[in-house]
Image (cartoon, rainbow, N blue to C red; front, side, top):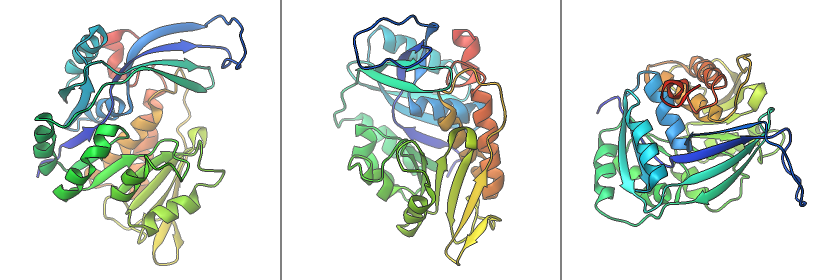
Length: 305
């Protein structure tokens, strides 16, 4: 087994429009504070983060043969340490993201690629067999490939994003994953009960990011993600609760911070860090992404800062 992380999930070409406030649902006119085009997609964000940390990573993603797809292939193909495995998707996923200076966002999906079973599946199945960790990000293709990922016997990490605890699309990811990440946008004021539920159902670790308040995690058996004893607050003998503060930074753009956090935790875990150390590494890595208007600082040289 190698130290490589294999990721299945979305990469997209995005236009970001910065607004003073999000539009109200009535006819009106607004002036943008600025706009730019960049790489998007949660899986692209994680792959960029891991590559930037020096981790060998292979990204399997659907990209079309259109102009935006060519731009996406070109940029991701020039990132050191990132192995890009493109699956033909007819059209490239494209988003229009309306953002505010405080990080509020509305994402409009302009196009989404098609996914059909085919010879490309064999490539990711072979890569999964030799992976240290498999990241299965939310997408129809990843959902279809979850049984193959589980059959490999490798640890599966997933990011449920703004899961509300009920969505049926998310449930197979929840049930398959050994490590679960999410944010607190829709789970309620206190995510810890749901994180405990994830661990009770079989996950070894469940983490919820809290924006400027940092993140909270629940680990099985009081053990850190790297296998070392955790030093969080004990919850009986079965699990422990851990918290990490956000790293203060002047925020330029919040896109990709959650993906960077997970990438930082994952890389530190594979390096043997205990859970609290891994969470701190995730917070530091997330802070580095908040200072660029792209998913990762490595794109500044390729797309302009």
